[in-house]
Amino acid sequence: MVYREYGAKNPPTAILLHGGGLAPWSLESAAKALACEYHCVLPVLDGHSGADRHFTSIEDNAAEIIEFIESEIGEVELLHGVSLGGQTALEMLSLRPGLCRFAVIESALCIPSQATASLIAPSVKVSYGLTKRKWFARLQADYLGIPKEHFEDYYRDTCAISERDMAEFLRANALYELKPSLRKTGARVLAVCGEAEYGFMKRSARLISESVPNGECLIIPHLRHGELSLNKADEFASIAANFCSREA
Image (cartoon, rainbow, N blue to C red; front, side):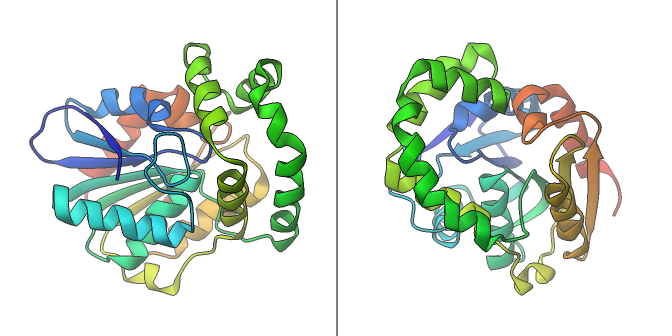
């Protein structure tokens, strides 16, 4: 497992999982905003730039990160994941009911679409070559809301993802659904979604909050997919801190 660290080495620990096609740099501002309270650990998801393994499945990635936590970290106070990272976090909660005390799941899709998944491979085959062209990468970065200061990071890391890995994690993202064992989690879970996201994303956030014993849903005005932790780090840190400090 490859990872980045921010903040003091002492507990409590926060695990932050980046979105598909991105890397830990996308959560760097969020980690720095949390660093006064947490030791922040940012793993690199399988199949992404800097990872030590190809992507196989969300389930395998979750099990690998749990193994890393149990061998290297121990207790986790806060688990956060955005998009593909949010799905991975949900899978981790399903596998280990006592994994953490709090979880903030941001922009995580959990309403599977076979139709979307069937289009992934041909779409990636057609567009993959374009990802290595800067003009196309800039269009994609603007669409995703990537901060200008991180464009070179985004471009470098997107170019480093193989066509096979990109198709596999995008397909897994489109097909992910919540496991029944998620209901056994002991964590308090906050499902966050931007108001400007698609309707199925907002429905996913509500479904997540309803699928755990201690779940809440927060729809944030004006925000797009994954924009809270990426572009609103201070607001993200404030929401997380408030959620973790309130009584159940």
